[in-house]
Image 1 (tube, rainbow, N blue to C red):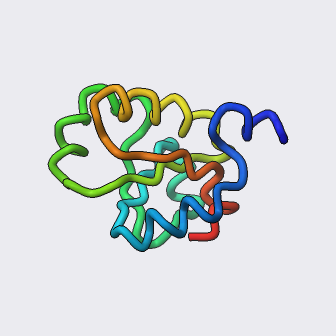
Image 2 (image 1 turned 90 degrees about the vertical axis):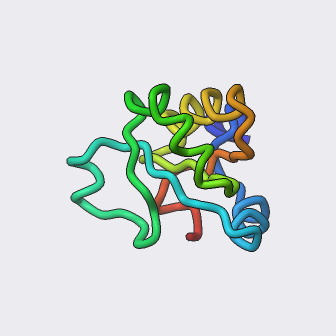
Length: 100
């Protein structure tokens, strides 16, 4: 298991597939500059720094969430905020490697 796998990132292909089947929202927590370089078409952008003040907005989606970033590290940090708020979320790892 790689470093990101130990912290909830890495290859979660089966979990991602399950979440997508449940209608999950893909939440990208990268910077706007990173987003502009490419992103998953259906993803929503909320930067990691904005996650704490966006929890209620994310809760209002009333859907499970797949959190992605460049490599999984920031997604793991965001995941902690979301799970503490009672949001059903998983770390999808790096957006290009998430098979979404």
